[in-house]
Every structure is written in structure tokens, then in C-alpha cells.
Image (cartoon, rainbow, N blue to C red; front, side):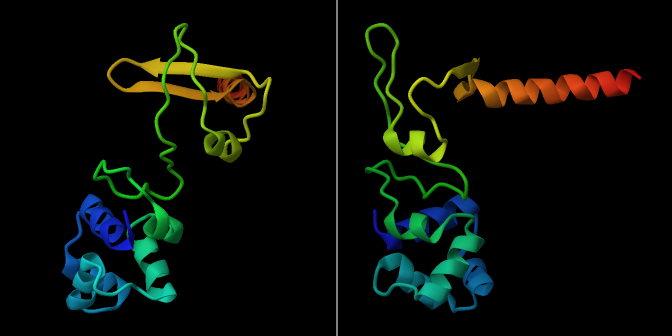
Length: 144
């Protein structure tokens, strides 16, 4: 997907009209329509304002590729790393970009959490245990 489709998808995900987006960015509705049709592209200043308004990044607006799924660039701080295939024994390979973003190194232990109907989540064991320790410390303080 190109910037035009990404602007359109992100605007729709945000529930904004072209008029509302235009007012937030400081341009006319027609300008937003031209960006979404691919007739023109926003300059860097307007791209930054678009990203802030649409809760994404300039990189997301410019280079996000939904692989034909028809989804918007992810919100700031959220990632779509692609899909993985479970092996015969349930093993998966975490995409390289995900390992880099979250600092996962060979030998790291991960905690697997799940909620039926919601999905599975992974987190580093050390970070999970730090969170458990923080909760336990708060419980001990409140018991005093």
C-alpha cells in the first residue's frame, strides 16, 4: 500500500471525516481528498501532522504495506510483524524485526500468556517477573 491508501485507511480507522482530518492538519478537505486519491502527497510538515492526528508514525504512513489485507498502518507503538507458521511440535520463529524491537536474544526465556477468545502474548521472563515482584511489593506495603 502507498501513502494515499495508508492515509485513507488510518483516517477511517480513526473514525474521522476528511473535513475533520483537514481541520486538524490545517489544510482543506480537498487537499485531504487529493492525498487519499494519490493525486498529490503531503509535504513532510503535513505528514508529521497527519501521523500525530492519526496516532501512527510518518514511516507507517509512507511505507506500511498491509500485504493486501486492507488494514491501516498500526497505531504508534503497535506493530504488525507479519505471520508465522506453527511447526509440527508447535514451535514458531519470531520475526527478526520483532526480536530487534523487543530485544529478544538467543537463549532468552519467554513467558507465554493466553486468554481464550483473545489470543496469545509473549513477554520476556525477566520483565514478567519484575512485574510480579512489583505487584507483590505493593501487596506487602498495603498489608502494613
